[in-house]
Length: 169
Image (cartoon, rainbow, N blue to C red; front, side, top):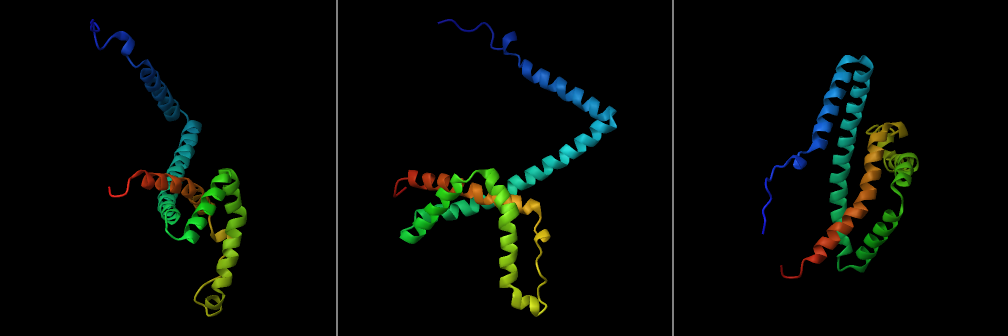
């Protein structure tokens, strides 16, 4: 059986990495040389930070809620199983963009109205101020929509993982 002549031949060189590095250097030069590119880069960098924050928080919340829903779905109680199944099937069937818009523009106002109705005695006693719709930021509305949407998907991952382990292990 013949062995290759060399494990580091010229065809193995990662040319794509060299091109990516050259593009990164060119972009850095353009950003450093132009105020417009510097402003655009600052805006994009801020957006990336917000995206990472929303992703991490929504994933953590969706994982916790998803685990709870998965455990409900594996429960001995028929009611808990049916509630979990209903949640998973309905939420997984709703497109994420629809869920984002619904939570942002219908769910948040409904939450504010419900919160104000529940805390009305405390508001009249002066312990709480009235919650306004604008007090619930769009960032947290997006986090809640992503949490609700992805918790249904993550619950199925947890449920399948738990069911894959045989009893007694």
